[in-house]
Image (cartoon, rainbow, N blue to C red; front, side, top):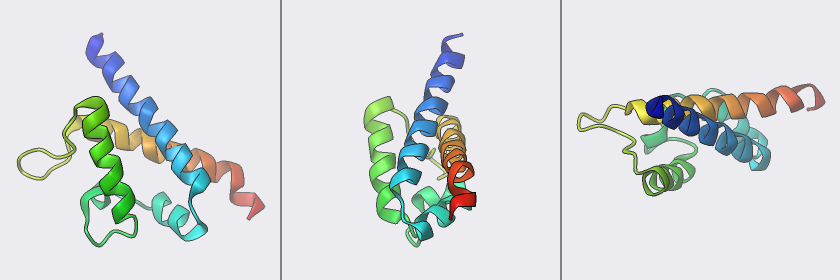
Length: 100
């Protein structure tokens, strides 16, 4: 139960962050985010490199989670958060797509 609550909190935080990001993003960044893959979060060539750097550091501070494991793969916790983030971005896009 505690693990499920923790995962739910991570997912919910990701949704909130994704929604917040989408609301303040310019059009190009929003389109980029809609197509983002989890590995973009630490890709130095990512269009959102600075955003991801700050966000990943914040996650480590706020939740005490590591974004990647020792092999450089996304951790389960970050995957849960990232799923929520994508949902938040997609929810915002669903609200504004036909208005653009």
